[in-house]
Length: 616
Figure 1 (cartoon, one colour):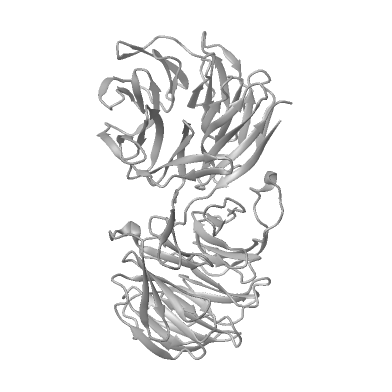
Figure 2 (cartoon, helix red, strand yellow):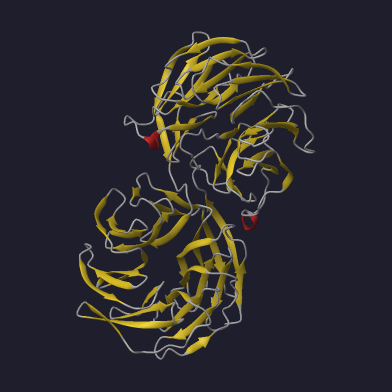
């Protein structure tokens, strides 16, 4: 009996309004690294590839910066607390059973007392400069293995946004920040050489040395590009109004003759260093929107990759054609449903996605519907469409192309359910029934608090009563809802989740402590209370089609497969998602072979695919 991971679908980069989002590119292994929540994501440049993927989640707070070492063996990542972790990102031949394991941390240091915004390695893979918004200092230069200081990063009067180190000896470094200045350093040890002010009139977002070390370029929210001499830091040229919006990122081509800039005007521009003229424009969208602001940039061998503010990774070929826009969740995923060979997910930011399910994991379809303004609570399938509900107190009917109907709800919904009578919406103190086109049919108020609903039949519903720690039965007759007088045994603590088996013979109820009570539906008798392996609240659970097993996940990040026939026998997989499991659903299950596949979603923003075998 085993649960084995087989694939992981990673989230898109996190973005912050008004801030550049630095994407790191590894030319040795053709990989990208970026931040998302508390995780660092490493994925192949090839958007069609699914492996190898790394989801590093050992930071205790949100990550803010990441950088590959030039060798590609190590990654340095920083977070909001000012801590730097250097970890092993080398590619090995690990089999699929260990592919979710966390990389080994080689060293970690507390660099400053505020968020780190940028990290740069020297060409020897031995020295690092990290900069950001500290209280005592805005940057620190140190050796990656011992943490020994190798200079002072001084000269700025406000937070530093970016840092770059010249790739050849003698090393030079440059930093840019919120004080509109560029500061140039000699080293190592890195020492202040000069501060160049007056060339930018707004916050400077990014800075890069050319690969040959001859030039240095900085870009700013004032829409200008400033070029300096790479070896001395002397001012060379200012290009005004280079874009129609602020410029967030800059990157050099390997030949050192051209560089590309990314701007809030929804475009990228390629510049000739010999003429200081733009020679090519890459347009993400003709419509200028905040979502399409280009806030990050990486130049791979085959693609120019830019990051939109909405998290999309835009892949251009070098002729300027947009080849692919890779989409996905940026925020924690809050719910998941599988139906008709498609996976539907909702996020904490209100985004809804439809995914095609493939052997190597889910893949987002080209179109998606953004149905809610914040947290998506639940999704159910209705005909060829879906109905979703969110914390914006709206119920929406949608397909992958558009939202066809939206209605305002009287309160915040807890859960959705589907019967032949229509769509059932559970609130804390109310339940409503809507037709499939979202017309209100019936409703019932109750005096207790509820958090979950289970459908036994088209006429019988079960809901949790967290006021008296028990279960209540509701009847639907002629489209009206009534509460019956049927009594159920009292739970040990407030019940939070009800899941009815496909055969309708059983229903399992999880309480606030994560302990299950398994009931018989016919007479409400207790079958077992031995499903007690979770250590905290359960968020989701699904029965196998034969009603013999229940897969469960929750806040404690563990996966547990419970058996009706052998209640004391449980299959465990701890730390399936390091931030907690928010949802799960079966993709396939063979009752005779007793094996199958299922997916889980987590607060880490990932979708993970698993194989389970319970034949032994």
